[in-house]
Length: 127
Image (cartoon, rainbow, N blue to C red; front, top):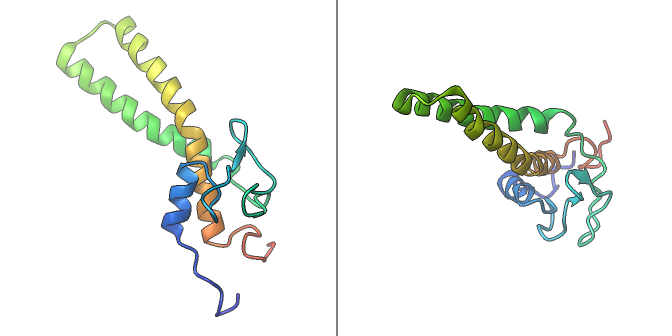
């Protein structure tokens, strides 16, 4: 790696990813559809096909959602002692909606981190 290489802000790339925007310019969209990554940013031309998010986005999404849902379920159970069917009718849809909403944002954030840290070919090194 060259000593004169420009610094890439991990925080800004993470934020751009959460917004599902290009980690470099922050204007182009990262995804074609729901979570299919574009080959190239339409705004700045950054090649996005280098990303290797693989199974990390669903893992982190489940980790975040389940912490929220289990905490909510236990709190509601202790305070209100609701029937099981009522708990299920509350927390299953909450889990589904949160997971579907969060997954592309987590994947975008992970792509942003990969770009900022020059991982998987984003820095010119294709190892």
